[in-house]
Amino acid sequence: MIDVLLRDFKLESANGVRTPIGDECNDDNKDDVDYLPARGASGEPSLSAFQSLVVSLLWIARCTRPDICFAVHKATRQTHKPTTKDWKIAKRIARYLKATKNLSLHLNGNGPTQQNVKIECWSDADFAADKADRRELLGVRELLLELKLQVCMPMPMWMDNQAAIKQLEAEKSTTSAKHVDTRFKFICHYAREGIVVPKYVKTESMMADILTKSLPAPRMEELRKMFNMRTIQAEVEEEC
Image (tube, rainbow, N blue to C red; front, side, top):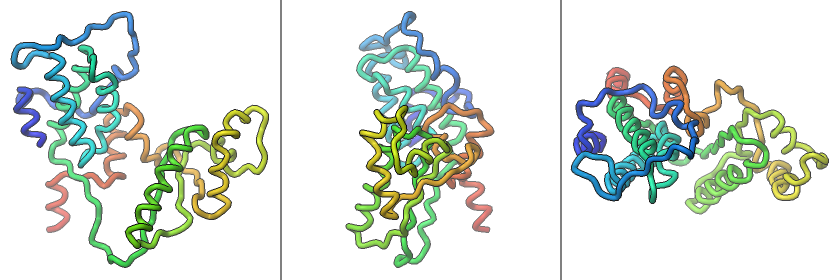
């Protein structure tokens, strides 16, 4: 799939890069915007070429490459009216895939089929955003229960925000957080019921960073290992 993408967009000879996105993701200058034309010559940036490229990137990110999720999200914020900046981000992702196309995601599916399933959630968000994480966590739990699988309880929600953990564990509201408390405090119910338990994890061990931030190459490599992403060569050497 990656080789096909590189061939279709004439990027086979492009230089690879070590990260899928850089500091350009923080540049939100809306005064200097250059939109892509609807149509362009073959190989030239255009709306149709951009949409074709990001569709392929979305598919790759969804199936086997979580390390490009954040970059793809940034590139696809306005697919109906992309800019030259969006086009550059999309091409950089393709160049990153070229440099790392031998990476594969390992799911370790060789365990006993009757073994209880352990669900873990990683969140680097604040207390107000935990509502979405809670929904995802409980949604996965309900799916596994429908499949007649035993789920280990409680389900840990790993967070690097100690203030958010204290809010979740608090029995009473604080005046400064009432607007949050009114909408989101019900998550505490799941903690008291033993369904979800918030746990602290150091920032350097926060796996969710690869899905939410632009990171330097050394940090990307660390998190890819945590996600159990390895090169095909490393996989062969391990089997030997």
